[in-house]
Length: 221
Ligand code: ADP
Ligand code: ADP
Ligand code: ZN
Image (cartoon, rainbow, N blue to C red; front, side, top):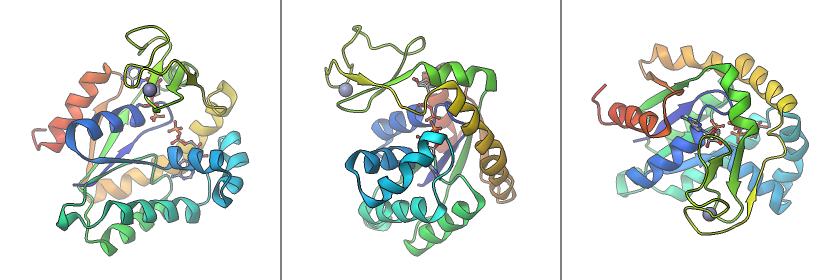
């Protein structure tokens, strides 16, 4: 099974993808995480992407579709036990949606669900400006909504170091939302026409959102 989690910045895509990954043996493919890793490593892709990401604009379709193709290759053949993919933050444009179809078809995979996380835009700035992650394992947290069980200690790996993204400031968030509205939201009708889209209330508690997604994946809603 291969699914897309779609929603504006801060909707909870990364949070839900990592929960589904640990609960269902699927693999989270986050273009944002991959691009941040490339920036950190100083690869040619990273060098091209850095300023664009800091401005909250979109990295080129060719770059992101290229890295998704490589990630799918690394997952292996789904008919031979290769795990299913959860696309988190990809596709973000109509051109990327088209590339994804080709990338999946070439590898004998199909797209099973597009899950739209529906959120209240006013809540997103608060979500994003409160977001932080474990510097060691990448586990996601929030100042108000998801503190580690023991303050200052990662629940997953015990690290005491955390980090915040340079683009998680209010001004850049506004640009990212505008990009979402202009370029990403318009791909929903493409998937709707194919009967793939289901909506989940992204304002519910984290665990409730996961349960609603799992009900969809299990064919119960
Ligand atoms: P996205 O990947 O869509 O940008 P994240 O999953 O990183 O979003 O979530 C953004 C922030 O909001 C994180 O700090 C996360 O802990 C928090 N968050 C995610 N889902 C919820 C939720 N349902 N309720 C409250 N906070 C949430
Ligand atoms: P968000 O929390 O907004 O969902 P992501 O971590 O998915 O953020 O993405 C961070 C940044 O990385 C984006 O603002 C954009 O610059 C770049 N990026 C990530 N995925 C894509 C993509 N599919 N197409 C173009 N740019 C992308
Ligand atoms: Zn950790």
